[in-house]
Image 1 (cartoon, one colour):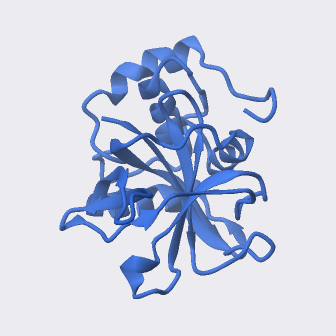
Image 2: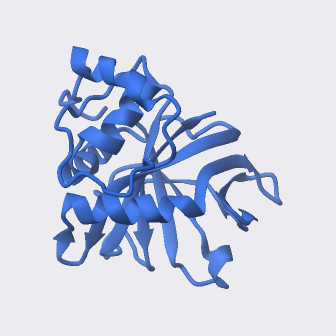
Image 3: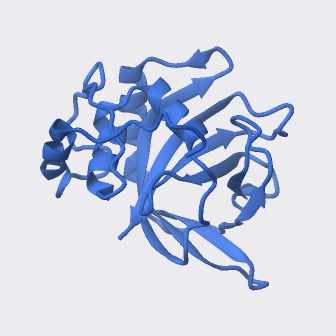
Length: 207
């Protein structure tokens, strides 16, 4: 982490780990909670506890701050990762309320639940999004010295190949714990000095 403000796990968060086992992506309930649980915790020893917190305990603003506080860390090694869409919806006017974000990502998550980190056509690091229809075209994974979020180092993937060369979706990844990465999904073109205004957030961990 870039500072000492990492939120440490608590006994309650550890106990909540059991609730995560077998839970479908973004939850299976039709009615989503209007507020987060409030026990926002990061446990470097337990991916399940960390994912549970990000999905159900942390507020949208806490998730954004956790991304900003994380270091770029290690690029995700090759393999398949379970993708969790987090309750964050950002627009030009700021973060939308938690309940709206939770409902949106619950619906959106039904389209896909995995990322595949692999090797691209020229042997470069590559990532594919897995949808219910299969893998997308994917994107090269680069180290960027300045992210859209805070102009700090990040791993990034621009999925222009999915949209006929138009920059519609750009992922940014940072390593939150040894086994969990946290990310942002920015919508539309942008630069570090003029970043996209809209986007969401995600977390992923190896299967």
